[in-house]
Length: 267
Image (cartoon, rainbow, N blue to C red; front, side, top):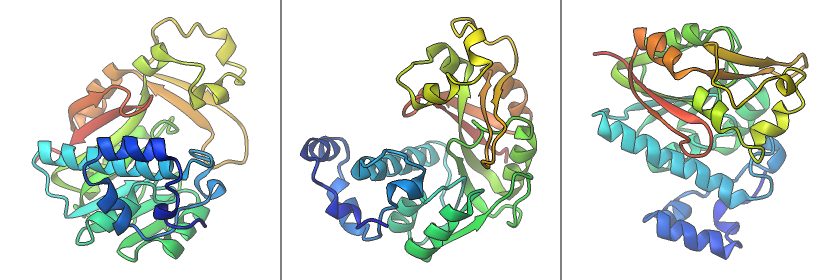
């Protein structure tokens, strides 16, 4: 456990950049008095750049609020599928205390951390790899899944049907993916490259060529909860996911190298 974000403002260049980019940066810092997860409690995301970790979640909150406003969705309930140690959920809990907030992750360590250190208006629980959730029908207005479907190789539609069940009519799902465009843009400076370059299948593939299949799956055999990286063709997302949801947008590299797919449940 680390101190609250207000005690991690030593990077003055980043602080100046954040103040220029986010009008309410200082107010958001003052409102969040909850501890940050140490590096090992967030699977090493952002290393020791604790303010950058916090800012990434705050920026995601603003993206989500803007999308909800754009598509006329009132955020009375939010569920973060694969919430990890609350990177995004903490901001919903602080900025929207009246909202019903749910989060789940397959990693029990993350859920234990959220329940121990973050606000009590977050209901956090462990999910399994089986597509089922202990939530009521039409329970929330927004479902987020950051870096989750990037690891789902076989049950993407089954999970989407479960997400569809818990969404209220007109609700949104914000799902990030590795798309066929991600594949073409592949950059050796991305963290994704570090993992995939050691995969036995990867060197034999010419990544400069467009994907020829709906999904490109790189699978490992190990003892981790998620053991694959998956790339989806955007045509597949429109043709298959679009049977269940309206595919409103696919935002390229939003904000880094994954694409954000915005799905809306039909009213």
